[in-house]
Length: 94
Image (cartoon, rainbow, N blue to C red; front, side):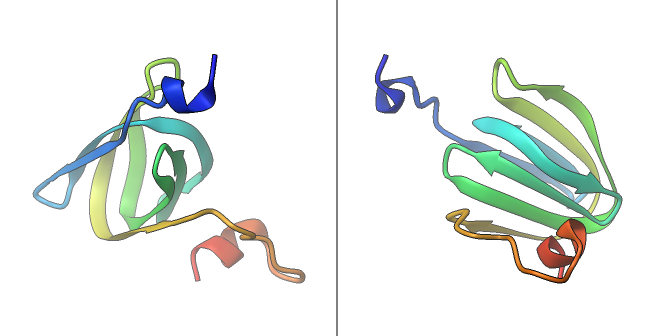
């Protein structure tokens, strides 16, 4: 089946900067207490914060729930996030 026909869309809902419910999640690229990097239907989503953890993840449905204090979130097209010399997480969460 054509990939475009299989797109499910993406949503991001945040409550009080401490809980996020998301759909359209394809994969978790990186995760630690200060940042989460997710591949979504709409590009790569970077979430920065404190005490972050994924409460629920169902990749078959493309759903995820995140808890912790969210400081920022940003989307990118993915592109080349690899840079020589720095560790993977250091490059992502600069």
